[in-house]
Image 1: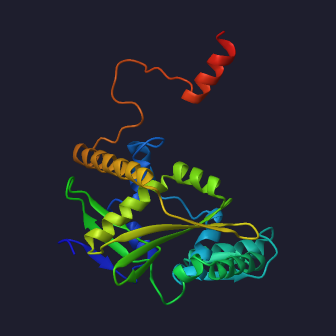
Image 2 (image 1 turned 135 degrees about the horizontal axis):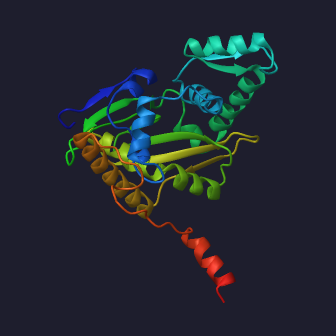
Image 3 (image 1 turned 120 degrees about the vertical axis):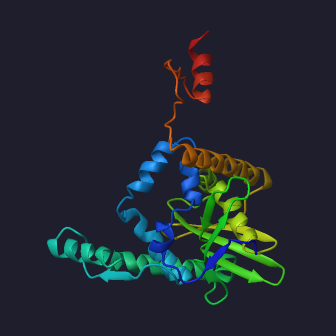
Length: 280
């Protein structure tokens, strides 16, 4: 294990996210289509929990056995004041509120994971470590980094880091687009760096994507070498940006200081298409 590395089991998610070190999610927000100014604002003004994340949190709890408590509410919907009050009280206590039919849906999702030929054995209860928090210092920039793998399966000559995500569409094509849109190709090398700093050898990072609609299909994938290399290069850039912003106290938006108004163009694909169609 590298000096200065901290590895914690049992650390709450709130404690982890309150730490001022840089996470993979934060690193992604430093780069386009976001920017350092947006990153700084979001860190200083965290948003309230969104209902759209409740399914994911609940599925993590039932599949991985770790996460906030689930408060199952016996209401059909949240249209009544009683239901709204119960929902708000659950959130105030740090629990995830779920209507009865929502809870039953998440249970079915967890059952589908357990029955899957790859995801089932990989995420089997008692065979791995959920939500381990790792903190370390980046040697090149001095930036303090952190990661929190969903699931670590430690074998004699191999450590499998599994990341479980719920998604609207779990088809390979949709998963590929989600990796691009959400920067998940940065998460893989970021977490592998943290595990290497903590002393792990021969790490394989595996994504487990599950659709949030019946029949809750599952796609398990690893990144190819090129995609992972691109993600690592983006992480390196984000670390340099963060180090510079922290040192200077300047968190720029998308436009560097300039006296001119920059030009902007159509996306490349649209420019080519419209040029072929209209510039004849």
